[in-house]
Length: 226
Picture 1: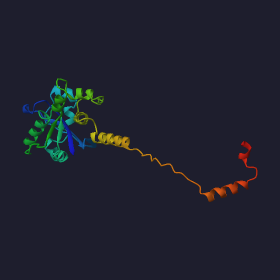
Picture 2 (picture 1 turned 45 degrees about the horizontal axis):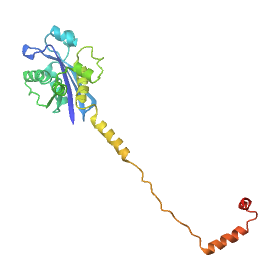
Picture 3 (picture 1 turned 60 degrees about the horizontal axis):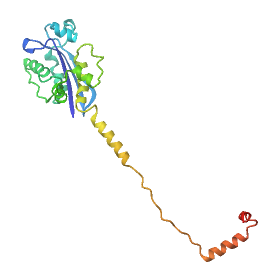
Picture 4 (picture 1 turned 120 degrees about the vertical axis):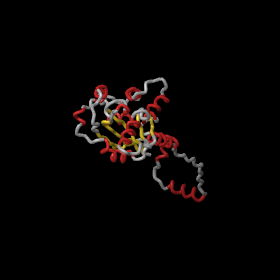
């Protein structure tokens, strides 16, 4: 089963106010295991960042001036996500609406992939507890030292780890297989065969031959103990 953890950075919080996407990052998971395959790109929004957004992600307007426009990155982005389920933190209210808005503006169909919102998963699993990405990383002891600023690729990688923990721990299939192997080893044992006593009885002829043979032995050692 293929899934894609996704995150975006934007010039501001509301696409309805004209804000744009400036970075997209995706991390591929296969059977709940990161494959190492990623998609990441910066985008020229053709407008300035809001001061609050710039403070959050630290991406300058000058840095984005020579990057591709959103319409130019659409083919590669859609090819990477394909029809796989998309994992996004608050994706239902932020990431996916932003992406769909820009796709529609560029005469493309909206994203119809299944959406797995880790914010919803976290609130169901830990009702009443903080459910932002930082809080979940701390809860699951995921290293946050690389997150000096928000960045789509960093956040997508952290999100993939959080998602796996919410699903029961990283590489659940491998863990289950390991437990199964241990149980099978415990059940293995060797049956000890109990042999019946066997009695060997000499015939009268064998006894006579034995007596004759003993008589031929000179100074047998057992005579010393008589």
